[in-house]
Amino acid sequence: MRFTPVVALLPALAVAQEQVPLADRVQGWFNKAKSYLPTATPVAPAAAVVEKVVEKTKIQEKTVSEFNLTNWQSYLEPASEPQDWLVYITGGNKTCFGRCDKADKAFNESVLLFSADPTSPNLGKMDCEENKVLCSAWGAGAPSVWFLQVPQAQLGEERPNTPLHTVYLNSTTVTPETIYKVHSEKVWEKAPAYDGPLHPTDGWLAQNNLLLPLGYVIYGFSAIPSWLFMIGISFFSRAVALETSAAPPLLVRTRRALTINPKMSDLDRTTPSTAAYVVATAILAGITGYFIGQGSSLGLFSNKEKEGWPNSYNVKPHLDSSDEDYESEEEEDSEEEGDGTELANFDSSNEEVKLVLVVRTDLGMTKGKIAAQCSHATLACYKYLTAYTPNSGILRRWESQGQAKIALQVKSEEEMEEMQAKAISLGLCARVITDAGRTQIASGSRTVLGVLGPKSVVDSVTGHLKLL
Image 1 (spheres, rainbow, N blue to C red):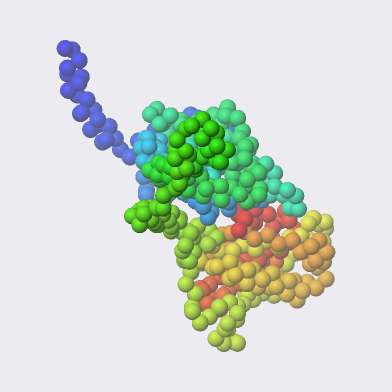
Image 2: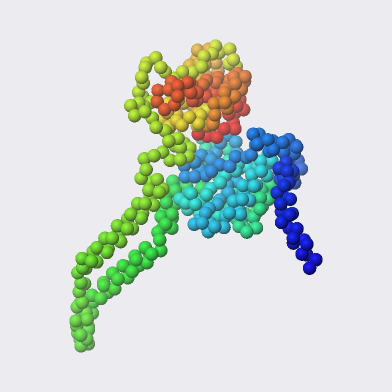
């Protein structure tokens, strides 16, 4: 009775909650994020963060990478620095039985908590409804969180192990804080590291390039409807019954000796009727068509480029041109001018020398085009050093140490220009290739940046980039 007024006020309280200013609500999110961080971890001022959130044009949310069949290997490839990945596994009605909606909402809201934490890992997401083959290959269950520790790349050595910890989420009680605590309180450490055959990078299936084929097989069996199995079992049992009905000669003689009617043992198979042939042909045609349709939906019979890096560009080159054809001998790929005054000699350094090729992935170049542009950049750096510092120890060490070349990826021309400027300020050889525009991309496009110099100095410019 006394609770009646309180119950009547509940709708009003809900409306009042919705009227809370955006800045105050976001302030609450970031206060929660700060409460989970270690005290020694520097945290951005809350007022500045809230101001950025309120001004929508300045929102700095953490990027969530979508994992699929064509790009997951590039995300988990070792780079110049070790990386941690927190990958959220979700699904739809068929792969999550409609239980992932609350978990999806919690993960989307937890992105703000990760954004406020400078120590947070890279965020990824895989939808098993859209990536059934990859989900089958990984043996992933939804909803769950995979925490992977991708090691640093080691030149000339085998790939180090990538520890994988799986944290399963309760689809009814999961909250944004639950997902964020997987990182902030290191909940992933409580789950034992998985080292079985279905490990995405360390399992023997992945090391023998059998992981994805197994995923197709598992998905193929899961896609077969139950009625097909029932029909197959029916045909098999009928065939076994017909085989056993024809008694062997010894059994016939035994039956005759026992005065059993010999006609029961002399039964022969009856020839199938025309109707039986028609029905069997229709069933086989239906099964074949079903699997062809499934294969077509997976892109097995398509000539189009698949979605995802490095073949995600849907490039349509001119029908009458290629990387080898050209319209004019005067129109060639070129590198920027320079006089060599910015080059440092680095004579006091005995460090390994390497050439880094930074490739723009936003231009939609095919693998052949990228190879051609990287060749241009390599030659440009070599010619530039030979022309202006012919006696440089850097060039001699690079030649004697095997001419190490590492291809990295960058997503915009602006970022490439910033790295070139930083490389030049450090005295490195930094050459940018400008495409002539004969085939796939517009004329004047800056495609590849080549940076050559001591390893530590080059890493200070490009060490944050991912491998191509």
